[in-house]
Length: 325
Image (cartoon, rainbow, N blue to C red; front, side, top):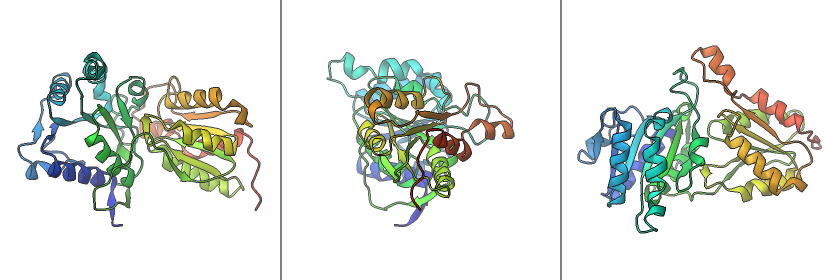
């Protein structure tokens, strides 16, 4: 496979589906002047790439109506932080419309948003708000961690008949990876075992997958082999893959950049404790950002985000037995 970046993979999925399906339209802030995945698409599709004013509630509301009446809008919110401005349109309209209409209306809407720390954008542009949206029935939430997954999951989002929040971590945009040129889709609700292991299961979300893999190298030098799982989609969540891994390893660490209260880490830890308690041979551990706003200072922001040392310490705290050399 040729190597392209994470953002190029997303852009390629968008372009391929737009060539195939004229009902796909792009809209949002800076859509025609974008530096990210949509850069240049307005030149190929001038009638289907629409710039919007800075009115998230208005253009997300318009996109919900467009989706309900036959189009497949892809809305760029820029930062996931801005989704709070249009939370009513997402939570009460997009996520509920199929239910409120008795299944007679679909809302094939994709909401794209950057998330997470790393670019020194301060507390209002650096949040990990995915737990807010995973809480909403009717909304699918996707957080790819590699270029291959980004293209395949975006392709799936573009043909899904439910609203999808597609989260793109800022620090992954220029990460390279092998991606097929031909179109392909990755089904939602299918987690990926990124690294097999026997001593502890580590479930990591988004950019935290690379952090977990760095921790795995540290631990391997100590004779501890961790299994790293990337859920890829947060809603629906592939609990069967997570449960199967915990049954093999007997231990669990969940790594999530979001705040510790009501995060994906707490959700996954609670589900495993409830449904696979008998399989656990040590305490469940969580590694998250602190319960505080994301700081603007580069040094403090680096300290805010979980790192490999924290993940390795959490794995050790579960008490894994070192594998034979």
